[in-house]
Image (spheres, rainbow, N blue to C red):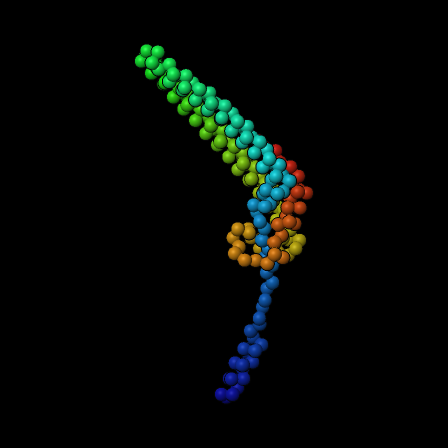
Length: 174
């Protein structure tokens, strides 16, 4: 009886436990590279840089005008009456505050355009990633930023950029 129990236990352990190995394919994508090097991403980057350079050019010209007004007011300080001088200083401060407000609005608008463009690219990237993972039997696609070490064969960034370029060759700014 004792041997019979041992026989059933050993038989159960041998045949009852199956080593099930599910194949999980993992890949990673460098999202920054996709956003910057895809056709849509690079065209948006160029447009945003152009807008930013124009803004900086305008900001510098306004700053120069404000500085020249300040120098003019300071040079005439001894000639003007105190009330007139104070009035000019208050006007200059109002102009400077208006300039700062305008500058902040333009920078916020630029950031909003950048965020909207990124959001649009990511929305168009999601179906590309889904289709690629289904086609190649990939279970998980991870952003490269979250990986400490990985084989270069698992990097599918190049393929994702190619597919995104086919689906989204360009993107317009609002």
